[in-house]
Image 1: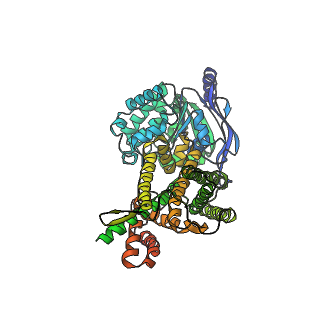
Image 2: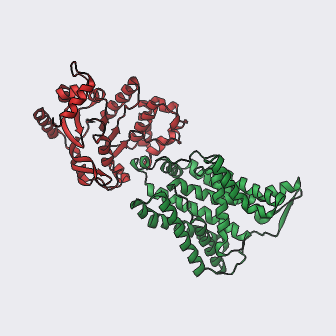
Image 3: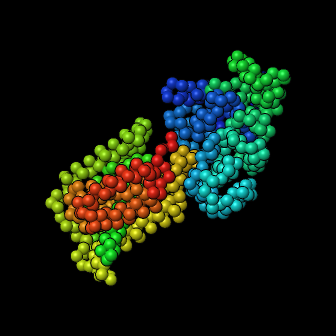
Length: 273
Length: 293
């Protein structure tokens, strides 16, 4: 399997230059707890990438480290964006380079209205471009136009997620990072959020998303990484990963007769893939 | 009845100054979740600077303008030079509050070293002894000017925060710092502006207060504590609350002083703090008491 993944990656890597290159990073909490332990991954332009893994694998930490939200982290290793070092820069500057992060809690300004949240997304930009972008996000999420004057905290979970994504889009990100965009959403709502992500990718935005819901993630991702204990343990195109027995068993619930708890015990025992 | 109206008008005039002080306290609290105990002392430096400029023969409008700028600059220096380095070393809220206390003491020392220490009357373009008589209610030129200025100042400030892009950035940054950062807002500059604006409002109030009180080094101590009480009354994280709190406190003080006893006037602010914290800790218009971590 890993060989298939290797060749797959090399082929794709040859086609497109890497947008984000993470090499051997270590992120620590409280100076001693390793959340990321020598993690390496590469994100190519104009594709959708998914990072999957169990709770506590370090997925959120990975996104926060890239966004620069963890002070003095990564402790070791390098992160390059478009060939330039970005690790340990201030989050404002990383955002300025074109990386926008939508956190798991959506990071909305809850007391501001929907419109004001979107205005903040346009910070520092002016002119017709902004108008076009606003039109695009209203077309993508028509509900936001209807709810313009409402406070963000009064929106439903799905609408909040849409607002968070729309606001991030107004920054014209080159790389959009999303932490569990389907979390807490009804299946149909999650589906419509994911459909929007596909449209966003179509206009040339690279997407890196972290998910627990593997089926949903595979439905739109071009390439996936499986993370465990702060490392990437498996990678490949969505098709390759979905054929992998371990992934089927542990993430897609296709483990034959075994019930899921048994599957998890198996998972715990099998430290190496 | 006429008496009560008289007290109310005097109280509103005084309260509008408390409101300006309270706005500064609330603005800084919203920005960094820090109670700025140097607020009154920065204001004192501004007022003394204005007095010295006036003594040097500079026209009052220019002297006031420069004093306000000086106050704002001092607050921003504190933010960039002391608070940010402290945050980088992971200072907690208590540590930052103590830093403001220490900075306040330094400001007081500066005033003692360079200011004129004799309590003195502050030359002000409006007179406190000439009065208008409106239907039996007497109001001095200064009080009326204070009231008008306080209301216009608060209202202008409200418009700045609610209706301009920079105000929007201030509100966003104070609500969710990490989100503002990931959206590329220059949060440090925005927060520094909050500190500067707070100090500027404080100096404005201080200039009016110096005209009523005698200008001596600790003259802002009491108004600062009153402003602080007004901020707690209105809700520490609410800007409209600061204005409402200031006006209520001003009127309540004037009424208590006039109808009960002048001795009771100053105690009232602290009674209000105690009652609010016991029975409605988030204040009249505030929404937050227990900090979200």
